[in-house]
Image 1 (tube, rainbow, N blue to C red):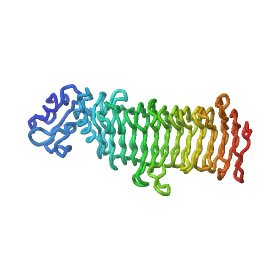
Image 2: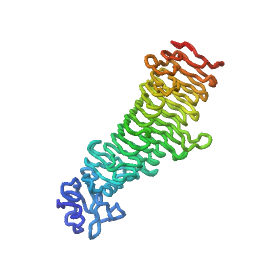
Image 3: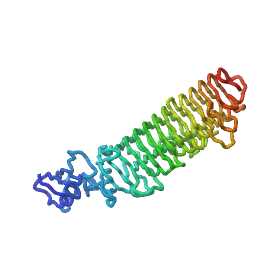
Image 4: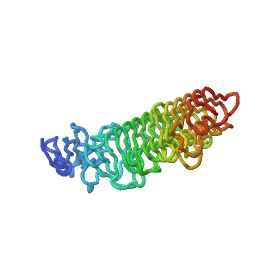
Length: 468
């Protein structure tokens, strides 16, 4: 088999060749990882509108036909000339040509071999699996301080998987996301590390899966942002997040998980978020009249929300959130553990969680209906010494139909404030059903339960330590 040293020599071969198969030892130089076996075909190149892409197809410098890669050893971005080399090398063009080939109707796999690849932004349209050699091996380093690293666009972007890589800026970022998904179907992130400004944007995508995502030292405002634009088809429908970790000690503006307008059915199977401003926010910036745009259905089996600067879980507008057993929300530096606002529609279940050590209340319910607070440990909150009373669990007048059952609520050993505090405080004008039953309430200097609403649907009984 004839051998050429680089892509230039391959292009320079006279065609039609005497031998129909040629081995290229590298792209720029022999041994640079761009080696590939090519076969000659007399027809025009299929890529680049006949001009080829200098990877899968190489157009001869003179004459007709095309050199077509066999890919017997698999598709590697270095075949297109991506070097993964010093910062002086811009791999944007080579990487984009490789992605364009891989991400199409045939849903090909593309390896980005170990190395540091400098680029100014990449776009994916179509279906593909793009994988690196590992989060510590394949580094995609963004040279623009405003552009997003990878953008997946279009309704044809189905089953896009990105895995085993590290997305990292080469300059200090002031805008952009590491990854954006726009109206993608079945997008998947697996074993990806990222840093920079914002993390991941899901804009009107469906059935996202994220597993083993690590976000560190983000300087922007969102770790993962979900937002749609109308109920159908431009809405977020379904996402599963598992083993998502984030840490941003010096960022007091970052929300780790934000569910905004027209986003539905998100499951955070396991999330560990340290610092930042808030761990979870549900809001409705579109605010369509009648509530058509409110986000719905967030299920959180396991959340660790550690040292947020503001409130850990902030439910502003939306409905139907479940925070289940095994979660811990604590050590808020200026806010509450969990808080709902008067605009919250309702549907909140917090069960089996530990809510400890927050500066203000452990749970502050400012709005919503159909709320269940069951079998939680809510202790040692209200740590602030601002002269304002912050009780362990506070229920405001905009709340209706609430059950507070079988919780352990206490400040015993922690009530060192000059302001007396209650374990549970209930606004007397609360409406609907109210059940406060079977709780253990101890150690609050002002008393265990404040507020005694009366009515046919009110029951406050069988609470150990009850002294209201």
